Image: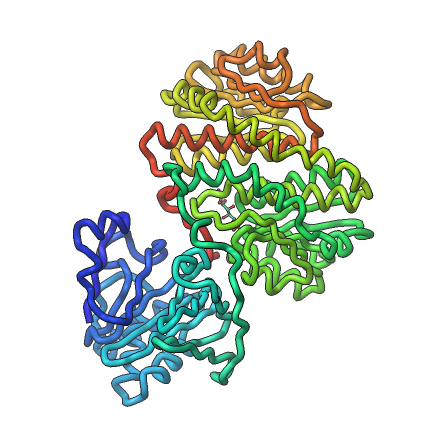
Amino acid sequence: MRSIKDIGRIDDIHKQRNFLQLEGTLGIGHTRWATHGGVTAKNAHPHTDCSMKIFVIHNGVIENFDSLKSELAKKGHKFTSETDTELVAHLIEEEWKAGKDFGKAFALAIGKLSGSWSLLAMAEGEKAIHLSRNGPPLVIGIGKGEMFCASDVPALLEYTKKAVYIEDGDRAELTRGGWKVFGKGGKNAKRKVHVITWSASMAEKDGYPHFMLKEIFESQTKIREALSADVKGAVSLLRGEKRATVIACGTSYYAGLVFKALLQGKLRMNCDVIYGSEFPYLRTGKERAVVAISQSGETADTLSAVRLAKKSGAKIVAITNAVGSSLYREADKKVIIGAGPEIAVVATKSYTCTLAVLAKIALLIAGEGKKMTELALLSDEIEKLLSRASEIEKIASELSKYRDFFFIGRSLSYPSALEGALKLKEITYLHAEAYPAGELKHGPLSLLEKGVAVISLAPSGETFAKTLSNMQECRARNATLVVLSDKEEAISKATYSFRMPKMDPLAIPILYAIPLQLLAYYMAVGMKKDPDKPRNLAKSVTVE
Ligand code: F6R
């Protein structure tokens, strides 16, 4: 058996080491998201045992790593990495060398672990790849005379449309011709074969230089699918409730803040928005209607919060892009946002589609279904904004010398400010933060001076006049003012500006997302950063 592993981008490693020199019909590979041990070639996956006959890859965290490792060390095992993963190879080795067949040795080793994992193992002379899931996702792809396994569906699209989602607690075996799943207690388990509706071409760049740009442009068409999403179940579950609790992380959390502003502002319906990772400490245990937002449907923090809420009796509405994902399966009501595969690590079209679905739900709960006609104009408006992408590109190049950015907005534009700042920092690694425009004077104003850029979101409406005053405060401190607005009065105050269309407040967070995403994109490209693969970040965050 042979392995090639190193640090750096896969393409670069391939150029230097040529993965194709590896011959054979069975293989595993993994890009590591470092938990235990630094980013070194030794810590890269796969990991192997003392005999170098067993190879494993792993996503997750083995929590009883220290005690298991010292037990194995006492038995004479030699470790070559600092990872928690390596010990699994040695655990299997212990059982295998005691005479168990490899599948049994794998199962016994897994039985000793606590923590979270999706794990694959193979061994010299064995014809199967063995897998186990406890937390992070695993999907089997069924090909013709060949089988695949990945952590997410887009990776399979080039090879097959048939997918089997491995459930938590499952173990499975893949051979060239088939698959077997063993559920809890090791018994044969039936799992449904899903036919994926996404196509391989949907996961290609289609002539765009980056997936991120392609995906920003796809908002124009995908928003229509989002607006036609079936939200009946969600609406019936939420209607009549006095309070909703949103659980989400990152960009999905910001979508939750928009939903809160819509529910509380429109319906006077209480809505708490809680980060998945904070839910264990903030929950009351009385949550009845939970809206869990996760484009991947696999975010560990969101999932564990949802499970906690379910235990105390909450009903769950899932808003997700991933049919069959863990969140999808656990929810009582499901809404699919219809964004199609999103390959760039950062959320773009999945955010706008989530917002569209949430706006629809809010309108229907409010009994204002007629207002959907306003939202139906979104696709055309997005198209017009996208046709002016070069204006944003120009602003991005003007801003290239800046290192500090503040994003400000009020009400529905505050989550947009948060999202604009997040997008910028994720892919440019520049300092960017967001505030409700009225909050600047309560502290952050002390940071404003020449050389700091303030991006102000100033749509017309009830927030406009006050936002305008906040902009003046920034100018008075010599900050560079970048304004997104439909009002001349705001545009005329700006150092750089981008004129927005005037639309119903419901549509504003969706529309303003487009130039903010483009701004982050062009700034990253200008700085020669890869916007599709920001450092340290993963598309599905499957560890807590
Ligand atoms: C930001 C981004 C992340 C995700 C977050 C939650 O561009 O992509 O902040 O939004 O990790 O992911 P999901 O929505 O898959 O739960």
